[in-house]
Length: 99
Image (cartoon, rainbow, N blue to C red; front, side, top):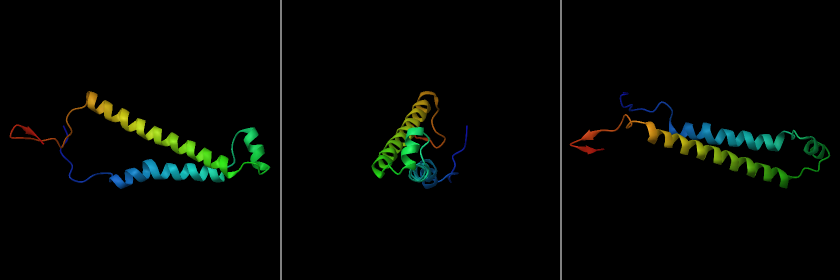
């Protein structure tokens, strides 16, 4: 249906920056700079009892969560492409062989 595009609309490096680097940076800055929303955690933060160990734990959980979200998005998207999609536009048949 669509002709083969020789130049990409969105380069791969920009995709990685927008989908991975920017969210990770926002999450890390948010955890380090913004006080927690929960009442118990906020009172501990105001008293200076919320240490770096807990912040690093929160960063770890957040990064694992975003990694799981990206991995599941890629898996589900590719599964649906394989399930209902047609061959990609750049697919060519030359001499009876698929290239």
